[in-house]
Amino acid sequence: MEVHGTVAQHGDTGGTVLLDDGSRLTYPLSVVQPEIRLLRSGQRVRLRVDGDPPQVRALTLVSLPLRGGP
Image (cartoon, rainbow, N blue to C red; front, top):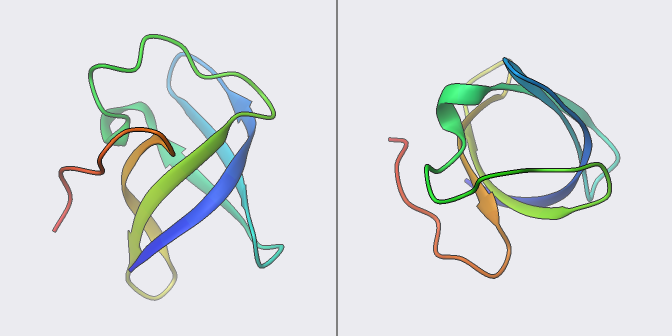
């Protein structure tokens, strides 16, 4: 499922994102698309999420196409 959110925190190993529905998810650095050099708090992102509990499978900026993940 593709969703949108806002970066809450980003670091060397990943970060957290606040989804538009108010839920918060963590993501590993490995799901961030390689053309993104730097994410910062407050930046809008597009994510591919699946599973129960939900897991982020791919993450990019809203202005870029979403690739990767299942």
